[in-house]
Image (cartoon, rainbow over all chains, first blue to last red; front, side, top):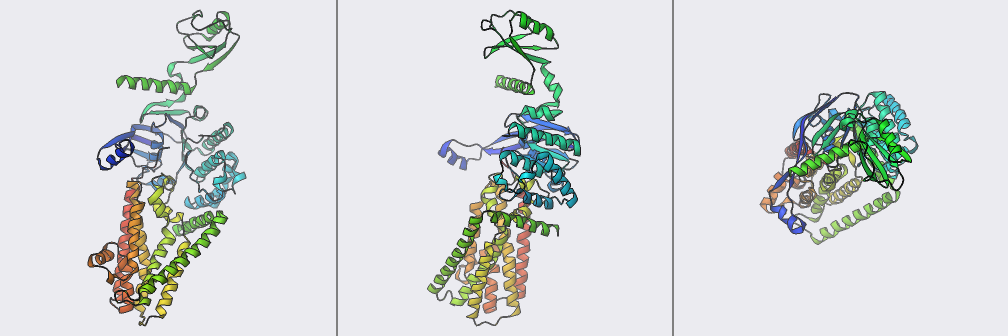
Length: 334
Length: 263
């Protein structure tokens, strides 16, 4: 179980001038600015849950993860991983967590992959039997057996990420922190990684905290999401609720004859918004308020639609809308 | 016991890394012999140019020089990774992996690299000492041998401790390599008898950066019996204990300030 309470991380940075002369002035200046990377957040994650931790670049996701796994010490507030504070008893917590940073490998660069695993076996004091079992499981779900004897630097990005994931799971951690595990991966590798995370959660009941910019990751894996913006939590709750935050929004994309345009089209109801994108008409409406059937009839009869696609609003759209609203509010204040 | 086993596992890993690049290994071995040959020649030329130094004869100065290489070589074997920490690894946020493992960060830094080059310096130092000792006419006592052994081994501990404390400052300043270089360069002073230096440098070299304590004083004790070898051994071991525990304490304090980098 992860308990985060009023967690804050402030970085102190000298206020720098521009260019060389500015940098020289900085040397003699005592002025600092405070950057509140994480600003008083609280949440609790029970065992066995898969949580999506999302937000724009620089929202404070990685900083939170780094505090939870004991790399950074919080400025104030507390974190408890199964009751233990990682920045006080780092080693005790490290034994039970696994961490992957998509941007940095945790493996030794120039030795065969299998040698890295042998060192990790000693570091985590894994028994021979457990080691065999884990290697068999990970070899299968992550498909790494084929390149175990290759040095890490010769692996492709996808192979390296799977190897990194395997390395983070080798000691059967109770909690797994994954910071952008699918960054830069092709669809097939992404699929494999998602399946592996799912499998691990199902078989071993591992808690997973996942940051990603890929909303498919979120929709495939997470039952709960925490949305972070400028160091504060904007939303924390089930994925479904966030999706329905703006109602049960559906979009109909219509292929229409060339003489039909959004401005001149007959209006069905004010609740159905019409716009034009790439020569197609897009209808957006709340399916709880306006019957889908009615809109479909209207599309074929009044707009002379030739073809149509019905889509639910994606989680990506919701997040985008929320972040845009936030930015607009912020701009108004300033 | 666990850590001894773990240390050897990690060192094996470090050696595999070295051997991964075949041509690089061959070049490294070759250049290593060549550079040691050069330093040996340099010592020979220096010693020829200065027949006596503050009353010390040629074999005596040679003995000094050879002995001063031993603690430096021992330190070189085990703690070379500290240079990378001080110059680069903290600044680049490259220490993350060590913070994620259930083993002390400092231990992992030591276990990251083993520098076999240190053996070369060790062999060279011992050879120089042996050659010079054969030309010396001193009565070798058990105490003198003991204080030399203590000076070499615990001197290495003191050098390593200094490196640990200064490398740790990188956690606060992001980069402490240049400072580490300055302090390390002071070991060059210890290659010669303390007698050639003015008073304040002597004090500095005994009490602050105690290169003189574990190099000059033991050699003087062998050559002239200036100190009680057993008491001096005790003093060196005491200093090593103080330096080591203080530097580990400094490291653990600084480690908490690690900031990593954005990703």
